[in-house]
Image 1 (cartoon, helix red, strand yellow):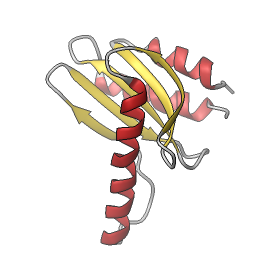
Image 2 (cartoon, rainbow, N blue to C red; image 1 turned 180 degrees about the horizontal axis):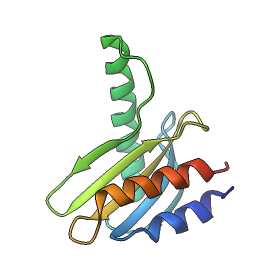
Image 3 (cartoon, helix red, strand yellow; image 1 turned 135 degrees about the vertical axis):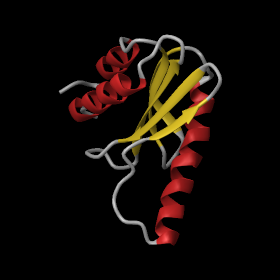
Image 4 (cartoon, helix red, strand yellow; image 1 turned 180 degrees about the vertical axis):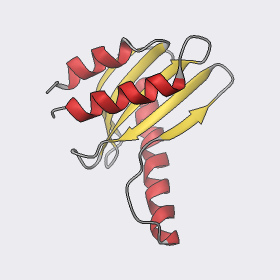
Length: 119
């Protein structure tokens, strides 16, 4: 089991990682941040709205189940938003440099980090 700081350190060890945070999407507050690339506090608040909107849309469409992850691709960055299964109301947010990252490997590593996260 890994605490928030250990998990953030592991996230930054992913190839191409620029920044990461663990977020309480019910409040929009980051529980911890590491790295750079974007304003992580602002990203935590904004992406909380993304997660809440997706949950509301799924509910209105009658889609059951959990979100595995949300991927946002930009010209030079990829953003992975992964709601945690064991800690409802939290998500892991990772910013990657598209030139240096392997998306499939990064998603797998984020899943592993999520599995070991202890809050």
